[in-house]
Image (cartoon, rainbow, N blue to C red; front, side, top):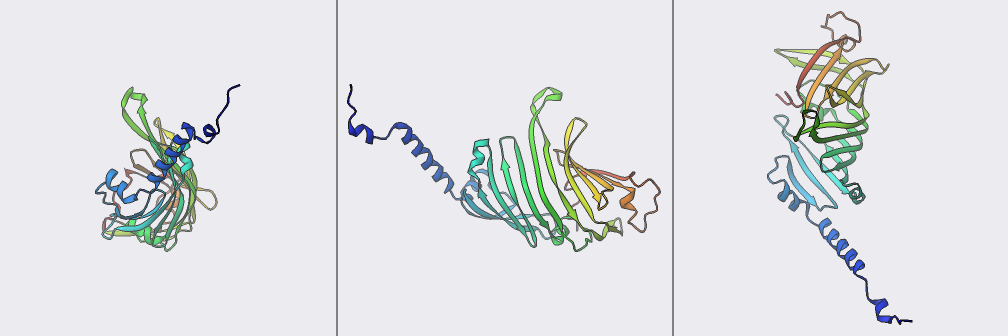
Length: 274
């Protein structure tokens, strides 16, 4: 019977050398400064002001020029390594801007991005930076919002090189207690008392495209309107008679569920026009 020397028991096998090398390489990557990765893969980005930390954990100061005074804030992340088993880069994120607080998970794949379990509140001063309206001093509550947007080939037109983007998942809700709101139109400001409302998120197929559907309801679950956002960031707005009845100057007559205002425009069109 062949003898196995004691030294062979002590000698590590090649598999363990490989495992050790992979773990060491992963450790080196995680300790890379986040600012170095940003400069390499997204140089001269106008939205990032300062980055600190590393791949595993860090923070960034961001800025979005939506108005004369840019919207600024911070974001902190903590990497979730188990997402690699699903072929994604994932991190837990906390976003702050003034009194606005949001936290959840962000995941990035080869042809998709998604947000999971996003909750918190969007403060009225943040909203005032986004739209040039006189808004009530009430925040929007964000409750377990989940979104997934992915891109793929345009199979309908048999064009494999043309990529289309669409929403494949949406869930959660936004709630707002409302209040008096004034919005400019022409040389006049129109006022409407916004009721307490809830926005339910889902995915709906229209014209062979999967769109993000935001269903606006009052606290009696009656329809106030619908918002649709497609993968090209086009926004369709439809508001009902029930909502417009809250405007003193509105004199229209129609069944309450009838859409009486319909607008289509780019998602960020007209924002911050002060």
